[in-house]
Structure formats: structure tokens, C-alpha cells
Image (cartoon, rainbow, N blue to C red):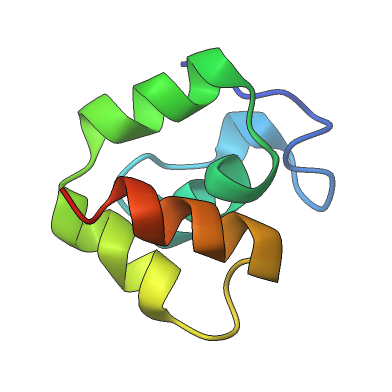
Length: 74
């Protein structure tokens, strides 16, 4: 997937590695991603990795954290 610069404003999206930067990608997409980006993350990363990001108290905004905790319960 080609990532938007506005999603990764602090780095060059071309330099982001899907595997090495997984937590970083998940964090940004769950907080600020559009539908297409969220679907991509949901299908490309294990749910346990998504839960790791959601369960970390410093990773997501409170509003995003509440939503994703509900989604990942199932």
C-alpha cells in the first residue's frame, strides 16, 4: 500500500517498512486512517498485534482506543 504523507507527517512514507514499522503503521492508521487504510491494516496484521497497540496506554487517542477495544473484542 502507498501511504499518505498526511498520515505519516513526520517521516517519508516511502521509507516505511511494513514489517519493521508495524506498530508505528498500526498506531497511525487506527488513529488517523481512512477506510481503505484501516481495511489494509486489519487484513495485513495479526489481531494480537492490533490489540498490543490498542492496549498500550500511550499509543492511541482515547476516542480511537475506545472504538478499537470494542471492535477487537470479537
